[in-house]
Every structure is written in C-alpha cells, then in structure tokens.
Length: 286
Image (cartoon, rainbow, N blue to C red):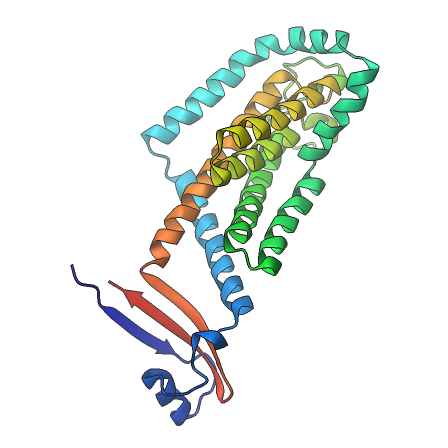
C-alpha cells in the first residue's frame, strides 16, 4: 500500500498571516529540522509517553482479560501457599547471621530503597538527555514510569492489607485488612524494597536484552529479598508478592511504551519555533 503524508498545522500562539503561509508552504529559511528545539521535542514526547503509559496501565487494570485474571490468581495463590514457609525461613535466616553478612546485606537495602532508586532513575534519564542518547533517555523514562506505578500499587496494598512485620512478633497471620492504621509496623505485605528492585531489574533486563545482564540484575534483586528477611523487616511471602508485582509492572510498562512507539509512527507532533512566532506541526502518516 502506498504511503501518503497528510500534514496539519495548528497555531498554538498568535501568528501573522505571512508566517502561517510560510509554515504551510515551508518556504521560510528558518523552518528547518535544525531549528527544531530538541529539548522541547523530547520533553513533549516524554510527557506524551507518560500519559499513554499511565492511562494504559489504569485501563488494563480495570479491564482485566482472562490471561490477566489467571496471572493474578496464580500470584495470589502462590503468595498464600508461601506463608507456610514464613516461619521456617525466618528461623533459618536468623541462624545465618554473621559479621560478613552484616557487612554485605546493607547493599541489598540500598538498591531497593525508594530514595536511591529514584535517584538512579533520574541519573539514567538526565544522562541520556544531556548526552543526546535517546535510548538511554527512554530507558530512564521507563524506569521512572514503572517506579511511580509500582510505588502507588505497593503502598496502596500495604495500607489495605495491614500485615504485621516480623519484628512486631504478632505472627505471620496477623492481618488487619482495611484497618487503615497507617503505621510502619503494619506495612509488611508486600515488600516495597523488593517490588522496587524487581521493577528496575525487569525494565533494565528487557531494555538491555542480554542473558548475562539479566542474571546479574536479578541476582542483585535476590540480595534485596534476602536482606529484607535478614533484617526481620519482612516475611518470605511479603518478598514473593513484592517480586511478582515489580516484575509484572516492569513488563507492562515496557509493553505500553512499545505500543506508544508504534503509534508514533503514524502520528508525529513537533513544536515549531520561528522568529515571527510559534506553532505545532502534526503529521499523520497512513
């Protein structure tokens, strides 16, 4: 099928008639690809991506298909089963305490900490922006999108579930569902550190697409799982659910971004800057 290009010029700010004609006819020497502000163009693209991903994630969450329901059912079922291992694993990890592990495990806490994770996402995004590396910038954007969505889901579940942390010594079945106490010791399920580190590991693994990188990334995520149990901050089942949530959200964000990239091949929105005014070029290919 032949490809036709249909260009629509929308004037976002007051423009004189001659400038409008120049935009349509493209006779103005200032109207060229070299004068398109990459900062504005990239920011426009990135905000559009964030909107698409957020909207798509909410829509997909509300309208779950049979495959999604099956996945959710498996995760809930395995999480419930894994509670039977909570106390044996907690006891075994307690016995493994040593000065060596005391020095190693804090790293697992740091890489899953939301503050450090947010900084990492920002460094990747800004690094790609400053260096002009689009793929690196997009990876940073995906990490940021995934972390925001993961934070909302994880914190929401923590408040709703109201499960006691191990150090509270209330038992692994002490759950005050919908109690909404907003207390740290009742924020055990799911593990936020684990969901965060698995979210990042999944996005990076999908973007890098290298088996060795994936093994390394998920090994680091495993260290966070061990650290949360080692610090008596979470039950094993907390970390399993956190890992599942992080992985699912990471994969969903990568998928939604891929869909957005595909849609952009048919619709392009580019800000235009001219000494006589400003405008927006919308190009539709079909």
